[in-house]
Image 1: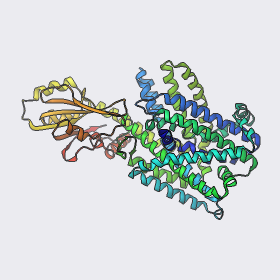
Image 2: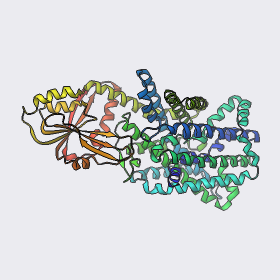
Image 3: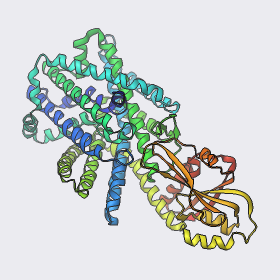
Image 4: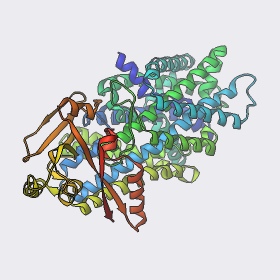
Length: 597
């Protein structure tokens, strides 16, 4: 139960605050007749059932690597099954686009959530005439405070997130039930006939409405992307509760809208009519819920970027661990301030939640479509034909919703594309740059290296003590090691190649010396769980290694090509392998290799 409550605060903040704006946005342009309301409610019910429950809670969460989920994980699961280089390139491209869209969505989510909640201030007696400039300023202040506290860590605050979201969901459920009592027949919207009839009778306009209906499912992808935080079962069980609550609230809002067709802020006006003086506490609770939703998205962005770092599709941004227990509680300063700058820009550019809705949905449906394609492919390869068949149907629905959101491009949806292009450009330039750099540097195979090493060791003056050389593994030798030993004739009495391997299990670590490679040359491997916090310096010390110096390679890229200049800039401003693991600076010696690209 504790993990289920915790998941409400970590995973469901985004989708849990969607009732604040979903129906309000849909019925800005659509006439709130009873038939239209029932039709839209039917579409919302089946969207939540198919695109969240079936696609994510059932299908996607059954696919994981090291307990983690997301497009990067699907890529890692698929690639070993593919022999064609072209297929691997297609899968990688799809995964990169999906990750980029999620990051773009991570900018819009806090903006629309906070702005829509703050707009509820206009219903408080005496604040009816509050200007939009004041609302925008309040939303910006909340965003600045939210992003500012990330550096200090949110583990202590996170303990309150779950109980607060339980209170939020209970408030949504109760308000929905109170409204439904007036018209229980609203549950006929569960019948898909009304959704299909709505689409058939409205033609192109109905197709456009789909682009707003998807707002009810934004945040559904968090069930999969955030799976590494808590595990699959707590998230799936919590979703069963959240699904019922959301349906009750949307049905209640539908009844209220039938009775008050002029309502602009449907949820807030419904609460105001029901609770009276309790409206202000509810408004404060809604603002707290949107802050929690934004916090969950920020943490999710940190997780996605960290996945990108560990799978080598993103550069090694500086990572700070804010939890003494779990590696999932991380802070990445670059990502934090990147998000803050663009969240403030988006709030000031769109100014109103319903305007922001015009940009919202394109990235979400694009990411859902890519998830659908990749998991369909994977289920088919694994010969899980039932799941593969269901995934095909779901993917067709995803693509349909994505196509409907194309209408938003001229009205602000282009911002989703522009925002996603930033991380996408970094991913493409970094991955292609690393490949080209590796080909240019030409690392030596171990046997070739050992042949030259054995010819030199003991035949040239050696330096007393122990030197460490860090490498991804001991099967290929990085050029900086070759340059240090062979070109500069720097060989210590004892030379140790240290490699770090991430295990499939979440916790635990081990380390040991492998077989001696040659006289004076050994290999030391550190194996750690993917959620484990570890101190490389302490592990080395505990192994009895008394290193005198630590060598690492630093590649200096020079090029006249603008793309490789950008790659060179990325390399300069992000930590290298050694700096990422925060080894003692007084023992570090960087070996610069200048590379022309």
